[in-house]
Length: 296
Image 1 (cartoon, rainbow, N blue to C red):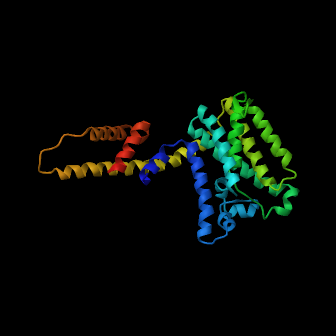
Image 2 (image 1 turned 120 degrees about the vertical axis):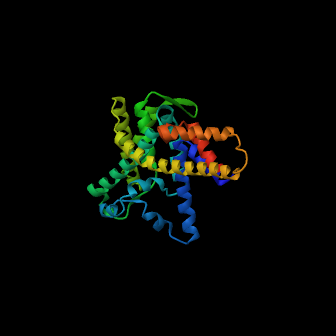
Image 3 (image 1 turned 90 degrees about the horizontal axis):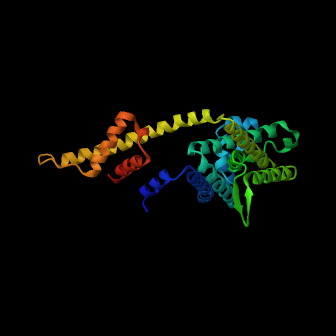
């Protein structure tokens, strides 16, 4: 399978699969690259991990999101991605990908924010505040889990040999985190879990009331995505036009050939873009245009 096919398959995968792949690729990069260049893995991850010290966080504010794509070991990422797949699939059965991504990212931010607040406000964390850092997608995964359990609490899922309602799973997970917190060496991680869970619960409850608290974030995301879509559209259009012009020049001086079915379809799509914009295309039309650009 060539790189073009891999790129195409990634582009057409749903957002859940993309998130899992990104997490796995980042994990492998921070596993292999430090080994190749003989760099301490902890030092390599430090600038992307979320520090508990407020002063350090101010110097690396991007870490409020990047920490959620780092993992401390195989089992850490394995369980996070497995749980994300289970509950993320339930969310995507009801909601659009945009909302799923909003819950995931804002859940990560909420978990990170609570982590920093607790380490800087509560005396119990005073001795470890400067040394503790946060990594892992657990807060984002908790947000997804608790959101769907709040929005659709009586939905049943199969667990081994019997069915369990989503709200039963949510209560069990939350109680497990709270019970472990006082004695766990990973108290900071459990605090982040709680932050993600609180956000997921609030989002779910508000959505049931008709209030979308993630709407502002989605508008911001749309603005960012539209920039990249315009660049992609321009690139694809240039490639298609260049291909058409090359074909025209190669037949100069001879009889004008009739248009192929593919070229007619390309022209129709380009006309639609010029009239209504790239976003007016259907998924199949975007896929066709993407393939046409890659095949040239």
